[in-house]
Image (cartoon, rainbow, N blue to C red):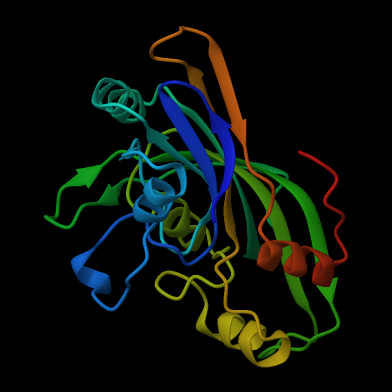
Length: 230
């Protein structure tokens, strides 16, 4: 059962667990359960993905309940008319705030503009040596991607040398191994916290937010951070 966090006549949103694929994919042929299928069976009607979030990312995942709403929402996401907020735990102490303006390359080699703004919410220094460092430093950031490129946040934080913990593709192997070996944590610590937009049918300003998943909360506790709202 998925946690339904929003529903009206045209749209429905769930709090997607980390590790759950949105839909069937050739790159994960071994997977038999998908968010689209689970939600369809759960509510007894067809659902249409309005956007995508990574398999490893938890949080707000929006579906349409009819084709017209699907097309309208997909267009809004494509035109950057949906405001998105993410929480991430990254390596190191990040600046209080920063804008990452760094183009990203598509699979076909084409460069696309990509812009992410973020602010640092909390920092922690653990008495855990790693490599040449006597301690391990981490930051909790609130990220607002202004474009929607594939793996944008993962690539952008790696680009500024603050990779997201648990990101095996773009992250830090030493940190990922530390979290796995010392704390038995393998989840990528990226959470789709909130989306807001003008509803394509009603015209009403709509805001949908998702609580942190258990794995992310466990990492927060490890850092000594309270989940005190954002």
